[in-house]
Length: 224
Length: 386
Image (cartoon, rainbow over all chains, first blue to last red):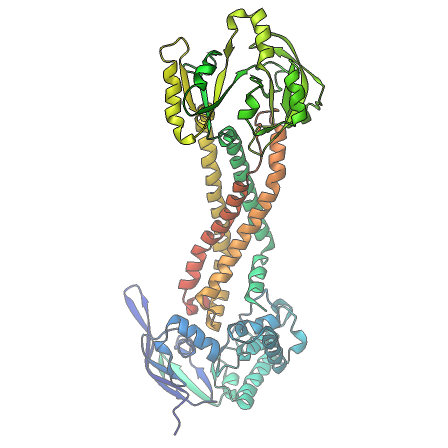
């Protein structure tokens, strides 16, 4: 039997506030298969965003291991981790986090700068990613000229432009109206089903969680 | 898209702030260049000094004359190549505000020693033949619209009386460091009238200019010349031309030093202006930089974005400042009394320092925001509300 794509072992994360140590995640053990679509739910402060950040390699655990496709990301240096993220992780944030001075196309092309692709190939990839999210005709628009739903779709295009193995989404529908949220969830569902992406999503929204193949609950820093 | 496009977009992101920063840097660079140009103008005489020329003057003061008879004895000193002399004539041309140096010179030797005054040979021949002929600098000719053959009437003060000179030569300065505003005429013409009207002052000159074979021997030759006239009625002081010119600046040295210091304080002000802009700019974009880091952008790429933006702002400002410095210097020179600074131009070094300062200020101003961006954890940056 093949090893799980993502393995989290004895994960512990705490923050130091002056002399006080505040535990955020405790005793997390988790296995996620390749091509899974997992939603992490739980009340505010339960540690679900922290867990997502640790798996995505933008934060470091206090102890424990996170193995992704055989690589222990907790052992990587900052530079190695940056390279690893650029190749393996696509980020979808609640507030889209597009660069306001760049067009939709340029925003999607941004992570492709980190790849060895030539200029023309980068542009083709970015246009294709925008076509996947249905925004080909809006590629030259700036974020301020797009609706919230469209901005989030551009963010999804940016997240998939480099063809990462793990798109991670932190409250992807949290700032959207119902119709836009449906569009975004439909898109993530397609990424998972059609492109076999391993999607990890943090959400408060039960309708969003329904789209996931598996839901993991966190409470007070522990997996239920 | 290349990263440089994002860099340029960031420079233009806050147009008003960017423009104000660029203009602020520009004004500061212009002030720096203007002050440096004024300081250079003070030192123009020093800069133009030749290493192989010594000046022998009266030991008590430059204003006291020396006997003409010293010339032959100085010429005998080993290592001396040629001796010439000059006397300060002063006088008033048109009115007292029209200042330029007027010298009675030994026309047989003076222009050999001062080869930086380029006189056309045919003009020099005519000058030599005519007793009251004068050679003037090209700036004097231009300023007073004087042509060859024109009469220059002067009212004497050091040598009282009405004097008339005929312009027979117009010299061109060899380079920008040469004073183009000197008037020179025959010492013999001066001596002729002095002998008749002020016989007690006959046979006196202002100072000797001594050309030597080897500048390395200037100290020994100076000592040798001065020892010739020790314990005489007119003891001498011999020094290099550079030291002689520098002695004129001693009275103004405090002002010159203050101007020099001020010009570099201005560089510090530029640093604060650009630094302030960059700190504000980076703080506002903490969230964006965190996103870039999350996407995989490394420290070197963030350095390129932040330092590049800072350096571009400083360089645009420096370019603007240097561009307006040229008309500003021209305007400043026009505003000064004529002849105040005979040599007044923006030296290439000033332009180079202005550009280098812009580059250095840009790089330095990026350090604090860069450190902040690089040390801020991604998760903290993503939580930042700017």
